[in-house]
Amino acid sequence: MRASSPRHTRARTRNRTRTRTRSLTIGAAAVALCATSLTMPALADEGPSRDEVLDASLAAVPEAGVPGAFAAASVGDDRWSGAAGVADTRTGRPTRPELRQRVASVTKTFVSVAVLQQVAEGNIELDAPVGRYLPAGTLPQELADTVTVRMLLNHTSGIGDYVVPAFPSLIEGSTRSLHEHRFRRIAPEELVALGLTVPATGTPGEGHSYSNTNYVLAGLLLGEVTGMPAERYITERVIEPAGLRDTAFPESAVIRGPHPRMYSTLHGMQERPRDYSIYDMSYVSTAGSLVTTMADLNAFQAALFGGELLPDEQVAEMLQTVPVEDENGAVVGAYGLGVYPITLSCDTFWGHDGVVWGASTLAFSSADGESQAAIGYNESHYQTVNEEGALEPHPADLAVILHLDEALCGADREPSSEAAAELATEPARDGQLPLLVDQLAARRD
Image (cartoon, rainbow, N blue to C red; front, side, top):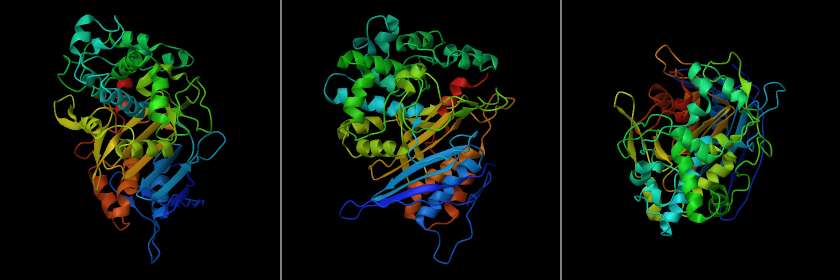
């Protein structure tokens, strides 16, 4: 286990805006995590404060085996942010709450909001064929005529994912192509073309099959309808109206502003984690290239579910889900339009996870916009692959879910280990997708 030092800030507002910031260091993690339980530290008579409970649950994430984690939570007027572990394993530089993160597929929620804004304004019809809006020739005519805008946003188009053909060595169990393409610039049209080389996952509308190609197409569609690049439209109509100051699409392979190093072994393809913090993100385009902070993610979710970015009708469309099935046809989750639900110990929350080389993020909100929590950590694809080709659960996955549960549900109950233990015995709740859904594209057969 890696030692970690939680650092946090907390702010409360009552009647008028007032911000209080403080920090502390805890020498050892206050949480001992195992596969089925969460053990809280010995408590003083008055019990741990809310800050201490959140610090402890966050500290459990690096203690579970990733370098560092940083998070933010907002419940009503309460604001908390924290960090634990290291941002750089070589220098020991600690993480900080305000670090910027590549949030990968959390980008999809931003893209969905942008498309739904155009739906609200009458410029796009959700159930119209994408060929009405996409540049001619983007898709074969049959797909252009049958795939709808909604099918792109809820991943029922049947179009395959371009990730493996974009990094062909992955299918051989090698990361060679990842390193060869570190500085590659690739156009979204090329990504779509690669996706079309993959066998279709089904007929359009038949069922859910997660594919990054869908959201690259959504970005091209948005650009064609608005007359400006999708990234510019999302910046002007989503990011800026939500008041996000540390959120942007990257312009180079280097992240601007404070950020962690980003590590991965790619499910054991590499003996030791390699650093992917410098990487050209054009390979994910509007499917996952956004850079932001955990505080900005919470502000975005609050604006979205608080009705500041979309009319109620379009928010309701986002929450209309299709079933997500495993390879045996069992329903294992649900997916809406750029968001999906997870059920924690107190309620159901909506949001998305995201994984790119070296970075993992989860961001969720209550449907009423009153509660948000986001967590990022600087390692990805850390699970090992078993003999059947499936990912083995990792203690860090459980630690992340337990932290989210504490952040979103803990204020509604007395601090104790009981709810955490209940979650630990059944971490995959009704309606919850597999935690790191993006990783499936890079899995070895």
